[in-house]
Length: 300
Image 1 (cartoon, rainbow, N blue to C red):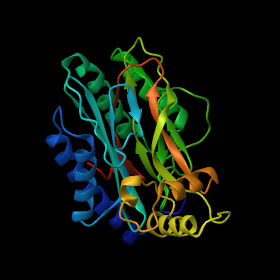
Image 2 (image 1 turned 90 degrees about the vertical axis):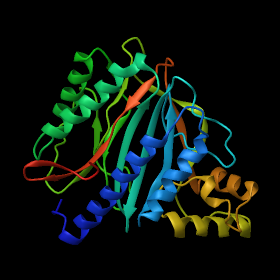
Image 3 (image 1 turned 30 degrees about the vertical axis):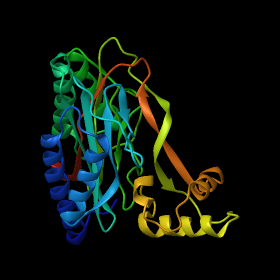
Image 4 (image 1 turned 120 degrees about the vertical axis):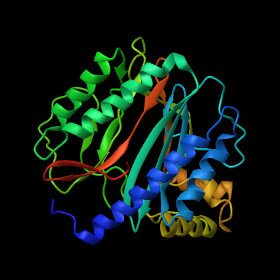
């Protein structure tokens, strides 16, 4: 991959500054009993206010929910007492994306699990460099987590990032695996160790809910309203994920049109991911740019 030119790197850096500021602000403001929709909308509004755009809906994943929960319109759910809350947000400037996450813990029983995820992330940032294989990186992440007495989630991974693509190219598993793929200078990655308790299964399954969606392709629609809605989605979000909350004020939005987009596979849904045995999950995440010396953290 060619190295990023200065203009592109500056867009990543600006997205990273916005994301890190919003992550800190939201993590510092979350409280037990708060409506989850208020947290999501506060994060997304802050990103826009600071000059960025959300790269995907803010994820607020609580306890055994590992990823992909964002509030639907008029969501009534609240942050539970004694919970573990993962806040995952993304920012883009002109399609250049950063992705970052933090876990807020209201339950001292899970402090060690939080530290294991953070420690694994710090280790990964320290050792990732041009030429290292994804298998070596995954092994080191797993070792840190297990040495602290916890278990990595085997089927949630970090990922390479591309323009208007949150997940592009290579994956970064948080466990030992067989792969000859290597990290190269000039690439951008989101590193995100997901950690659960030692007695949990250590993998996620799809839940019954889905509140995050993405444009797939044009054509094949029967009604004018559905065609207009799809054009609106493509124009405003391209290949980036979106939520129904962002369509509330769209004149073409209706449940029947939205259902037609899903059933015709013009858009796809991201199911909520839940730890298979109900184990609680922690997550920390930074986006890094790989230069000749290693990781430059964009979201710190």
